[in-house]
Image (tube, rainbow, N blue to C red; front, side):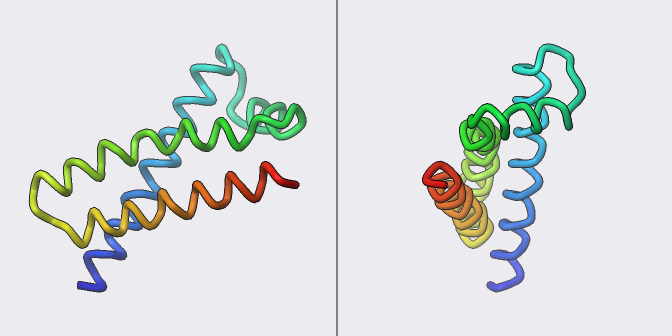
Length: 93
């Protein structure tokens, strides 16, 4: 059970990282990934960019639900909630 939750969390983190990369590349109009992240932090929309990256977690979540791997889906959901809390706290400060 714990192993499946950790696998789901790992998949959620990887999916979020890939989604963040795609969002930064798409919205950055071909600029370097690090430049886009630095510009997003400087202009105050890094939280929004991170939230866009979490969209791929939906795909992973529904794949795990469809395969009846509920504990892995729970891990993805935990990472998604963590990202939401991180975005909320980052937005406050």
